[in-house]
Image (cartoon, rainbow, N blue to C red):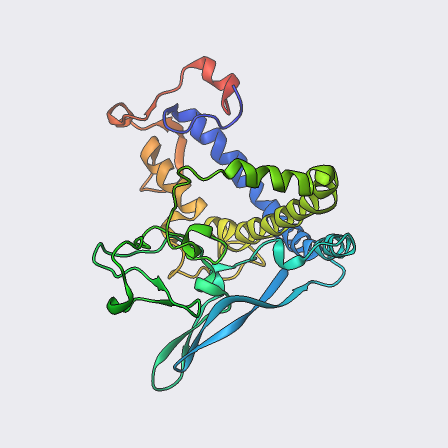
Length: 302
């Protein structure tokens, strides 16, 4: 059985062995953070600039892309250079939205929202009530919810993705193909691009996926550095900042939880260190653990 595979039910000796191994692993946390930081820098970052939509003293962002940049000399930068050299348009790769980029700024008279990405960095379904008036296309191509311009046959926008790349929203509803001969359109598009499918995949799509995966990896490594390790050891080790108790619960620090479990599972002196790690006399009342037997000692981490 793999190590640390017991999660919900285990003998008391298993927890002791697992906790000892994990506490020894603390010595590598600071080096691990340095490694994460170096890897994040090596991967680099993509930033897409979007056009502003003025909104009082704050601002929102439209989906119109007006700029694209990457960290110079990074892994992503080299992939983007190759992608552009092969004819790719970097605006087509991804929106590269970051939800934690939105800020609330105190202007003195009010607190306003400052967006860096459209939708605050989120792409989500639209919320609406059954009575919400659906938008109607006008002659100039704009949308309106004016009751005088509606026919009553429009589709409600609830549940549609708030993005210009979501076709049903721009077609004013999830349209049924009905008797439309859509196979003819597919045939035409096959004739147009079928001869270059391999080139499209190798010169564009494969590189696009590599860029997106690297950007996603950098985001995961950043979360591990700033959240996962901080939630476990914040303020407890050298080079780790003091724990922000508004963001992390100090009662869930790794060593705090281990001590709480020691008190519950083993005999202790005045709630201090365990006494020879003997099972607590109340262990029989716990539904998730039980005393050790001799054969448990040979497979304590299993």
